[in-house]
Length: 493
Image 1 (cartoon, rainbow, N blue to C red):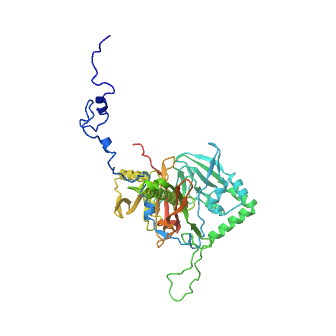
Image 2 (image 1 turned 45 degrees about the vertical axis):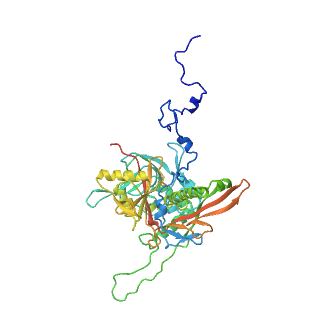
């Protein structure tokens, strides 16, 4: 029988093997080296008798939620907030929408034609469908001039895709850009119902684009054939002839600079007979905690309180998202289209921020996605500009022209890597933007948020209903403005 070259140091199952430490255990006095003998109690065993130091449950989705912090909140005792305004005669414009059935089959959705000022409130869907069918697709190339200022208006255009610049000759012959038109906007619709209209500015394509064009002759044929459309356009024209101030509100007759005792004009301030009312919205969740957990595992931290804390954080995050994106009252969907501008070149430049800032008095804050803020800083760096900062409740926040720029990750980023920047004037006293909530709720946990006990079910699970009530109101149209089509990506060097 062959004799082994080497006798093993330990026999399997011996006391020496059982007392030897695990080589992977670094807790022994000699470290992880193999062959060491544990001569004192290891840390793995010691932890069975020790109390660990723990943190409360952490949540990565918590953000700064600046919008909830900086908005003035109005206590809505009746659950509904009515915004009374002066009678507004100038019809605001919206944006039409399109359906794409292929590269060459692009149609305007007929119901969205009522976003045109001249068709606002028109309800005959059959006429709208027939009118939508008269639009024809037209592709344009970069640099193509659609029309020159002073030419007769022979067509109305809907912008399906692309960026178009309005420009006019300056006082000394230079070219001045006076506006930008992008997806969903209209060009020339204001000429409907006017005799011999002419283009006030020229329009040139900044990028390749697609338009839908409607000849004026088609509109004239419709009005001659459809009495309801002719009556609607006539009422619109009559409303536009009424005296109004520069904001489109019904004018109040006044006289200034007179001497002696002339007869003074008399009148009154007319009110909007159908003011908008905001009902409080809500976000809810049912928190479920098993009674066994609540009874036995409440030390050193109260399990129910920790569950409630994280649930409230999630509800507040959703609340801020709704204030930005909700179609009924959110900022992005309810800002007046007259207060929306597009970037001239794509990235958010100091020029675009200045234009957005100049559209209202007392702009209190900007809201932007963090990537949009970074893109704006890159443009400032290219020009050698250093944005300032503002102190907000002890926090240093970046600012432009003294107006703080708050990060808000709830502002969406589209698939084309574009976003928006929002400017707000806030407070009831300044006819700005206000948040709405209700305080004094039963079982109130925080202002505007309550936690109501719902009982214990047959599975011994305790149920709590967590509810936050809120909404947002824009008191006058110029209280909020949006810089749209903000490109976030870096340009090639």
